[in-house]
Structure formats: structure tokens, C-alpha cells
Image 1 (tube, rainbow, N blue to C red):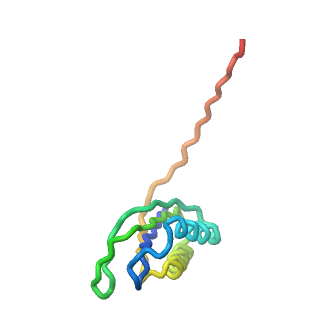
Image 2: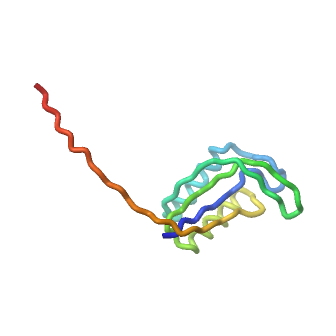
Amino acid sequence: MIETKIYIGLNDATTKQQKHSTETYVDIMKYVCKSYHVPFAFSINEGGYFHENGDYTQERILLISLMDADKQKAESIAKDLCAFFHQESVMVTESVVSVSFIKDDLNLEFNDK
């Protein structure tokens, strides 16, 4: 199975400052992933980025993980979020992962005496 990760900085490409709350960016990301009907997980991290002109920005990063998403769909999500978050670019990685689903059930019986 393929895991696709999309790394999106939250600082604006022009001002190099975060313009909106982290929660606002998370809400937008959730809406986009839901619109594409793709299951996802995400985390907020810290990171750094070198702009095309050589400037360095330290910023919050939204890291999105997509499991077994169609490559074209993952790229569309990355492009949409790049535009919506006003980024110079976003980073996309792909890795082959092993996935299993574990199920178990506790069958507890309670005897009230």
C-alpha cells in the first residue's frame, strides 16, 4: 500500500507570516480531504523552508497522511491546499507501507447478584 504525505507550511508565501489561526487551516484541510472523499490523518509540526529566492522561513507545518490514495487525487489535494494556503510550494512524499487492521472484541459478562 502507498502512503502519501503532504507537508504544508502555514506561513504566507509573500509575507512569511501565518495570516490565520492554525485551526482555520485545519478546518480548510479537513473540508478539502472530505470533498475528495479521501481518508486522512494529520498533525501539526514545526519546520523550516528555503524559498526560491534563498530566504529561510521557520513555521508551523500541517502534515497530512493519505493511505492508498490515487496519485492524481493526492496531487490535486496538494495543489488545492497550496493555492488555498498561499504557499510557494508544498512537499509530497510517497512510501510503500505495510498495513493491517487489528480487530478484537471483549465479551464481558456481568452477573449482578
